[in-house]
Each structure stands twice: as C-alpha cells, then as structure tokens.
Image (cartoon, rainbow over all chains, first blue to last red; front, side, top):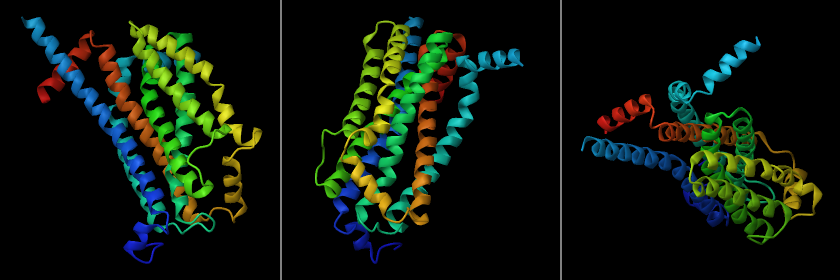
Length: 58
Length: 253
C-alpha cells in the first residue's frame, strides 16, 4: 500500500490519523459545497422562471 | 492594433458572448481539475513518503497550501475585476467578481481549518492570535463582508460598486499575509523553517504538491465560471436570449 505496510497503517497514519482524516473530510466538504451550490442556484433560476411564466399567462 | 484590442475587449465584455463561449471551458476545466486533484491527493495520502520531522500529519499540506494560495489569488482577482468594473463600467467584470466570493471564502475557510488541525500535533495548539493566522482570518472576514454588501443593497448595481470598493481597500491585507511570517515573530515561521531545514522536499512529495496546487487553480476557475454563467442568466433575465435559454432549461427538466 504505497508508503504504508498495511491498510490499517494507512488509516492510522502513524498516530496522526485523526488530524489527517478530519482535514481531508473538511476538504471533501468544501469541494462538495462548490460543486453542489451552482446546481442549486440553477434549479432556483429555473423554478423562478417557471413561476414568472405562469404569472404572465394568467 | 489598438482598435483590434478594443474590439476584442468589447466582445469579451458582453455577457451574452461570454455565456456562449464559456460553455465548453467549464466542462473541460472541471474534468481536468477532477483528474489532477484525484491523482494529487491519492498520491499525497498513500504514496508520498512519511516526512522525517512531522510524521504523517504533513499530508495536510496537500490541502492546506493550495487552499491558502487560492484564497489569496481569488481575492486579488476580485480586486482587479472590481477596478475594471469601476473604471470601464464593465458589467461582466462585476459578475465574475461577485461569483469569485463564495469560492474564495470556501478556500480561506479550508486553509484556516486545515491549518488549525495541523497546528495541534505540530505546535500543540489549534489557534494562536499571531500575525499569519490573524491576517488569514481577516481575509475570511473580508470575503464575508464582500458577500454581505452584495446582499445588503436594494439594487444589484450598488452592491457591485460597494463590494468592489471594499475589495480594493482590503487589498492591503494581501501583503500583510505574505510578509507576516517575516515582519513578525509568528508561530507559522518556525514550522516552515523546520520544514526547509530538513532536506529540500523530495520529488515524491513535490510532484503531488504541485499537482494539488494546479488542480485547485483549475477547479476554482471551473467553479467561478459555472457560477458566473448562472449570475449572467439571473442578472440579464429580462433580455430575450436569456428568456429563451431559461425556456430551454425548463423544458429539459
């Protein structure tokens, strides 16, 4: 396993596992935020647009 | 020559032109970034050797330094775009500047949190009110201020201008962050020095490190681009072409 003897050693990261993995979890969260929030924005734009269209038809 | 430049500038400052031309970019930037970041982080986590002095906690560097770089580079970009917007009254520059804010803020937050987590095993403390850490916190607060100004204004155009002015004033913080480790005696410096006193970073650490930086740059560009395209649709929604585009989206949904 690369620089580690075993998968358990990889997870343990010496005795720094909790620091390394919590950092990478926060990193994953930041990446997820940046990927998801444009999709939510797009969704909001479309539903606002639909509402506007319906209002104009009435 | 000059006229050609002016024509080019005008074309690129048109939101519609930008929207049309940028579609393939966000796709390719996004995929390139995903690939490079995945390779960099897997390499950094699994294959890069253990650091002699810090053990495995040094692997945080593959997130910490790229996000710290980006949080400052994006701030500089916001200031330049704000200046362009104010001087040439260029709407598109304001749109891009606004959508840089959440991406830059998320990078500043990541740099601060990973720094705090890394500080615990390395310095024995999560947080210290020293120059580097405090100036990075100020950067995050500046980002929040820029975003708040956009939301506080009744008219989006006022938000653009107010935010650009704050961005320009806040530029003074960038050299403070950069030189904080030289001007003041900070916690950050001893750690960096220890790191450079050890033999220079080995290639097996350096390559994933540089890849992570490149990957974060590409990803941030892709995210800003995606956001800017939506900002264009929102701000130009009264124009005919945006209405057609939104109709197309609504049908496809």
